[in-house]
Image (cartoon, rainbow, N blue to C red):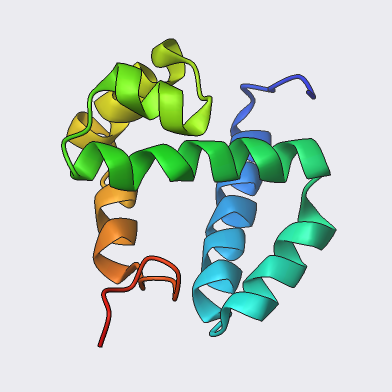
Length: 111
């Protein structure tokens, strides 16, 4: 990972780039476009880490215990705890994402 510079211009540039990244992600309207963007932006390991973290969030929202989540996902109990702290007291991103989550056909209730 690159070194973080605390000089004002570098911090301001990073903030602008992060805001631009958030704008681009918000503008991508379909899951296939987001998936393609993630493939281009991230390494396979980074995508796997993101997916692992996200897999924990709905299970926490369902009230599953940390140990059960570990058993289902393979994500360490320590990481589950970190994610839980973010769900409860983070920036609100996980909660907002949960509100916009669409059920996948395999997990959708029968019609």
